[in-house]
Structure formats: C-alpha cells, structure tokens
Length: 197
Image 1: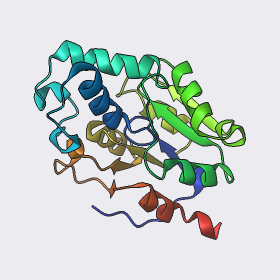
Image 2: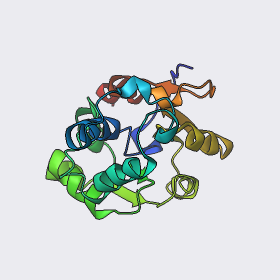
Image 3: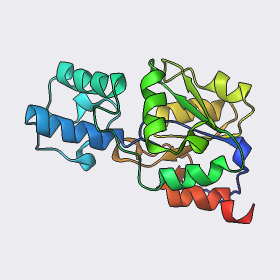
Image 4: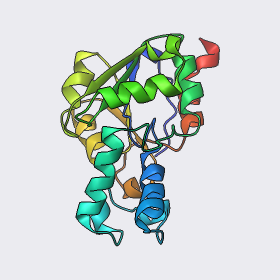
C-alpha cells in the first residue's frame, strides 16, 4: 500500500538494519567472500528468518550476524542508498530517533560516526532495545507517530499500538501485510517534504 501523507520531521523514527544500514548486502558479501556460500542473492531472502529460505547452516547464519552486530565497521556494513543524504537533511530540522533491536549500542554509535558528519551524528537519538518486540514503548515515550522498519511483524505490532508503521520494502516482507510501504529513501524524502520546510 502506497503512503502519501505528509510527515513532520519530529514525528518519525527509524529502524537501523534494513532501513538505514544495508545489513542484508553485508551478510551476502561475507557469506560468499569468507565462507564460499555464493549461490544466493537478496531476492532469495524471502523470510526474516534466513534459515528458512537459504541453504546455510543456522549456526553460520547466526555467526555472521553476530559479527556484523559486534563490529559493524569491520564487517564493512554500508548505509542504504540515499539514507545519508535524507538523514543529513532531516537532522537540520529535528533530532533523529533510531530504535534498533540490537543489544550492543556502541558499534552502532561508531558506525554512525564514520558515515555521518559530526554535526549530523550528534543529532541521533539512538536506542538499542535488544528485542524486536520492545520498540513500541520507546516510540510512544518520544511521541513519534510514524516509524520505518523492515520487519513486517514489528510493523504490525506498532500499528496495533496506533503508530503508523511504514514497511521498508525488501523480499522478506512482501507477504501481504496490508501496511503502508516505502521502497527507498527517495520516497521517504518525499513524505517528509524537507525541501518545503
């Protein structure tokens, strides 16, 4: 479902992995370069639980993700295309809330500091919940009305809590959830109408 409503900068928050950070691309690259699992692409990842859709041992999947989480810089994690530009522009209007299910906060702080100028990264309000299902209370505490996440189950839970959840489209979340979708950061920019503020 396409979303067309205008969003004010202080009303929106963002997930990290799969929204700001291209975690799937990092996973695919590491799986191939370091472990010689090179036979799958992004389109093959049709479930948030990777072990159900790609032929890799579960412990190896876990190990790669743990490495990305423990040291995102060493893992070569890159921003999603367009994220840096939009978030930089957004930071000129309001602090940016990032709520991640990661349990380690410092690797994210280090990663944001590398990819965003200091005058931008100091505007990030970063929350690490350690739980995909524990974002709603932080969103409500900050009086956000909108949240962008790539996990459809999280978005459904937020919608049940009266948050307008926008699903950042990926192959693993295209299963008829009926929620509003954004396909890229250009679409997010258009919703924010930054050029008109």
